Image 1 (cartoon, rainbow, N blue to C red):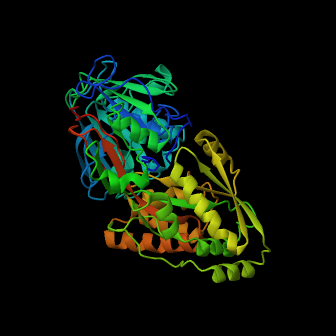
Image 2: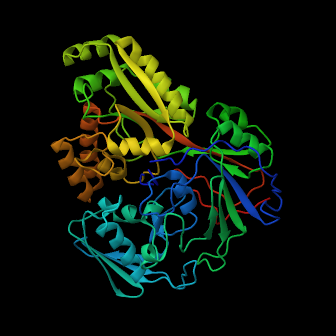
Image 3: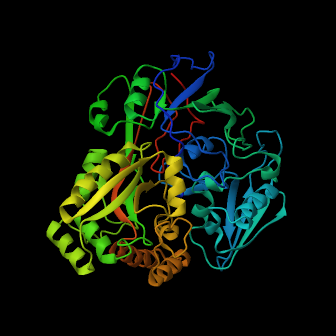
Amino acid sequence: MRISRSLAVVVAGALALTACSGGDKVDTGGGGGGGKNVLVAAVSAQPDKFDPHTTSAYPSFQVLENVYDTLVVPNAEDLTMEPSLATEWTTSEDNLTWTFTLRDGVKFHDGSDFDSADVVYSYNRIIDEKLSNSYRFANVKSVEAPDAKTVVITLTKPTPNLLALIGAFKGMAILPENAAKDLDLNTEANGTGPFKLESSDASRTELTAFDDYWGGKPKIDGVEFRYITEPAAALTALKAGEVNWTDNVPPQDIESLADDKEVDLQSTASVDYWYMSMNFARKPFDNVKVRQAIATAVDRQAVTEAAKFGAARPNETAIPEGSFFYSDYAPYEPDVDKAKALLKEAGVSTPITMGLMVTDEFPESVTAAQVIASELEPIGIKVEVETLDFATWLDREDKGEFDAFMLSWLGNIDPADFYQQQHMTGGSSNYQGYSNPKVDQLLTEASTEVDQDKRKDLYDQAAKMIVDDVSYLYLYNPDVVQAWTPGLKGYQIRADRAINFEDVELP
């Protein structure tokens, strides 16, 4: 997801709800919620659950980012990993043993003490139950606790991105020992983070400040997440003083908002990417020439401008420009005649009908799909845009009930986050059913290569094959765009879209 932070990615999404632009006016000088000093945040969708180890929904992680901690955490400035529940770590000479020293004086929200047994439990839960992030422990031989303040992770192979694997997003959160037995983690939470989960329903999720937070009690009394699906409604609520913060900003308004005194607007280049993928188990999309024809017909620049206006950059690979691991491989230029020729080479007769699954909780996916539909029509492919609520979207993706789908991966940090589980044969996020033994080999080698230049070369080779095979048809890398009440202090916009309110002060 982060989701995708992850997450890692992690994918973004949650249950669809009607936009609620109304509600009681918030006193931004003292906060809403009965006179308390509460920050009200407008987000696009409701969390699907609060179990950090099983959810893949970004709206869940927007909340959980403020409730749970990981051993290490990405730095807000450059996403390098820094201490959190672990204060320091060492590696053995052969890079197979990592020893973590845990922070003293950390308490869970129920008042119990945090120690190494909680780390061992959390990691083994993910491993033993084969939860969605178990691939992050593929090279882990054991997780042990020699004493209450030490955790030792023993590996079968060098794993240069281990810190990113265990700390990139709250899908790797540390739960108290036996939490899954003691709590209903779908609806309850018990973390070590700055805020406690108080309540959640179909209109909002409420957090309260944790007085005993190891990083110091937050300066606000709580956070209220309100679900406002429509970006225009979220912006209206912000300007009206009904909310203090939103990441649901209409792309077409970004330029004009830069000089708007009613909001503080900020943006930064993200580590996200948007893509379309086709079902390799359905004809004719199992034919690489058909997929290449579609990739050749799509004008990424037009799709990007329609969906994001100026707040994104087209890209034919996943990793954005500016990263050390960026690849400038771009073999597709919009060409109707060439696309038609590829369909002819495929031996496929037109017209072809393709269902393209999107979700209305992310309006840009609907807009992008409509543009793609218009671009594929001249080559004889009729696109039926299927606009679904996200719960249905996820269910159909998981069951393989689609011709094609579109969405994004958020919060990627290490190059493995961009490619590994999406394109490895049998990968946990390889819903399209792609399989290329050479790609498997390259991604496996890259995951254990400690030399950065050699590692980049391996990922470049894998990315070229993924693009040539059109496992994903990459579209663009978007910016993170967020807006808040003028005078709000202590909030920092991040490339990985992690939403941290622990240092916020309301005006």
